[in-house]
Amino acid sequence: MKSYDVVGVGNALVDQEFKVTDEFLAAHQIEKSIMTLLDEAQQQLLLKELHKQFKLEKRAGGGSAANSLVAFSQFGGNAFYCCKVANDDDGNFYQEDLERAGVKTHLVKQDNDGHTGKCVVMVTPDAERTMCTFLGITIDFSTDELEDAVVADSHYLYVEGYLATSEIARSAVKKARAIAEKNGTKIALTFSDSSMVKYFKEGLDEFLQAGVEILFCNQEEAELYTGIEGLEPAMDKLLDYAKQVVITRGKHGALIGTRERRIQVPGFKVEAIDTNGAGDMFAGAYLYGITQGLTPAQAGTLASRAAAEVVSHYGPRLTTERQQELLAELNLADEVKLAQAEAN
Image (cartoon, rainbow, N blue to C red; front, top):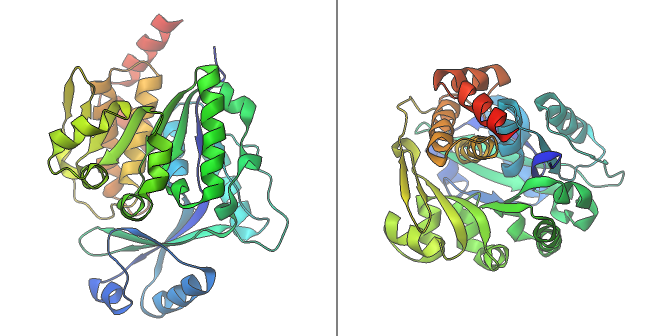
């Protein structure tokens, strides 16, 4: 038996979220609905302008893989996160945030002149989220932050697509992958954002070249990566790289595919307020279901319901209590217990 269900590798970012207008994005030439990398000075100028016009809605721990692992842990999974923060107020906040969510880490704060990464999240009235990120010290995420023994001692290694932006981070993923393959740890990957497919496709190619167990993406990312229009044709192509592909479709649910079958996952009707973190929540909930013995259809339904719930609130996360309520609402808590009993 392995000690951890999932070990994640990814960026550590503190989110600052604002409700803004489309006019603000246009006036500041910010591309809507994707993540844009900024340097620290650019981000500080943006924050100055935001504070002039809008109220800070929320400050929270963030990062694509981190959001997924927080969801995973709050459902009841055993998760570990490899990441990097600075020895500053945001770094302290981030570490405490992970601990509160039950995500384990051997975080060593870097005592130097660097700063913990920050993500400015701007939500427009149509609930679309637009992000401007200063990676800070996490831009140097490297093999030093990997916990080799934890990767070997986990059922899944979960990799976020945002690491494709950095050569040093790609080297860390390569090492983590080698450890995983040697020790029977399955690999799951998320594209994280369409900007990664548009601007850093070669890095994602590197992550996928030897194949993965599970690939998470949305339909736009699937079509961008494959260069193929249409859900099913894009799915067929992505199955060249993954044993299982999970394509999220917003309010329309998701499509789960293998070479042998397709599973249509239903969507859940809610009033969308903020789409930030929807894909992260979906991946975390799905991985929880799969690692706890649920079928792909059950795991997909849980993930779809949890993603719908998170877009009906501001911020990328839910409370532990709310996630447990969702398990009960779908009658999946008993299914998890039954699957675990059968496994033992």
